[in-house]
Length: 310
Image (cartoon, rainbow, N blue to C red; front, side):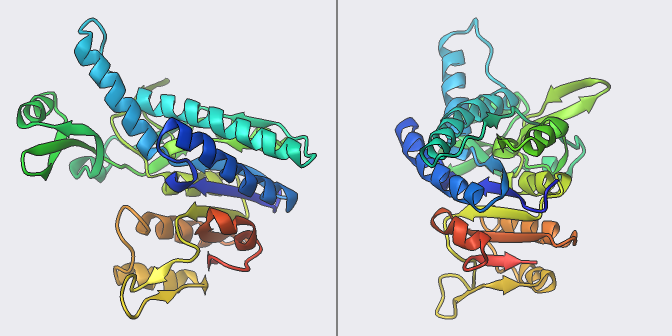
């Protein structure tokens, strides 16, 4: 692909939580995407879906409890639903923003499945909290079904899911074809729908794929030159929330690995972003990862701000 291809990973701050918040947030995200298009970049977008998939999972399962004739919605189906409705708002917001700037470029959302390894060690240590608060009886019922739960407060429980590493993007060639044709593509939302290969069939898995790791795989497979991770901070910090807090500018892969070994980054928060950044930048060929917030997307792309790993 073009050396100016950028994969943009939108965090949940760029999407909001409720339906009205999402409408507003996607309009702001669209401005950042349009800025990158004006910079001459081919843009492929991935995004978070944490609040959205949790809402869908809770709603579908509450519906199943109230209507016994309906089956409960598996996690893979909830993930697919979240991709569809986030993509709907996001692609319409981007389309409108581009047209307002006189840019005529198609925008498409691709329902994306991502293959995981059924033997991934993450299945032995699930950690991603999902769904509503359960009482002890409901938690016991979930465990009888083979699901994992964790106590989040005294007498309160919630389901937890594994976060296996992404192995392969099923719709990769579709994404590549559209991006090569100059379209803005939204793909691998929420890390993709987790699936397992069984012969020629794909079966949904009860798991959550880390969005940043899926974004890195997408950028790598598309041979993009930039992975732009948009999160809640302008720059990544060392010794965060201490008197010795230091903001990181340009960082080498070796230094980033050293900071990971020092446990500088919070698991489930900044750590997967740094791991994705290092993985992509270490592939060479001029690959770089930029971590910044949505307000500084264009300046980050220009390397005027943000944390840059290369």
